[in-house]
Length: 318
Ligand code: HSE
Image (cartoon, rainbow, N blue to C red; front, side, top):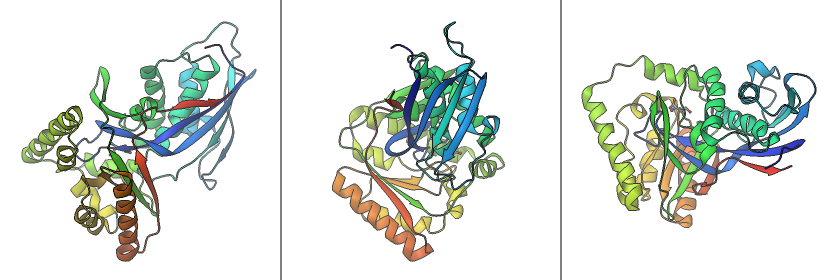
């Protein structure tokens, strides 16, 4: 594709961990997501012109905002000799910060993709992931690709290894539907990660999660939604983070009683997800889970339901 003067891109929100897969499993949602517009600039480097949808909470300094950091990393990958030296960016946040839905990852991916698209789709998916990970490193105090990789590629992604980096896209059962409930409270990823880093885990917990991850991958290859649901069980991280999400235990019990195919916390929370085998079941689950958050914790919620987004981040115009 030839280079462009101005582009608009979209990067989707993601569920991460998916129960047993701390830092190694993630999935792309259809909505919400972030948009970035970008145009070439004669001033070297990255200029972040505006950020909207963040209630004024994100900095405009490109070195302190993940979108600027990811775009700068993408620019440094080198372009054609005729390319201008810099870019101007406009970030439109389409999801709340600290939601557990990969907000920083979506902004990072959109920043890197916007630069790539200005250069005519110059960067391959793994390079986009690497650029976006620089944004994640800045905000979460560590590198985890379970939001960035599915946001770039779409679908369900397993991070087999961080060094060397290797991500594997897994089959997505066509009947699989997601129900996500975001209660209106925020959890900062860096703090929730500290909780995990400071814990000493037992071998029994590790054994439990290893079995579940193997089962999840098997379930996706077999198109076995029941096995997939049974494998959404986390002995490592969910017990530590559940107290951070007011009403989580009750909401999970409600989802299970409604026949959910598994239920857990997305990333560091507070969003909670469940899976279903139909659109109707996903809508019903999301409604009941949101109602329960209101009843037991007094929290209003946003809900998102639908199939897994198998496309990932994309250019929407320009
Ligand atoms: N895997 C990461 C965590 C995702 O659970 O900390 C953060 O969004």
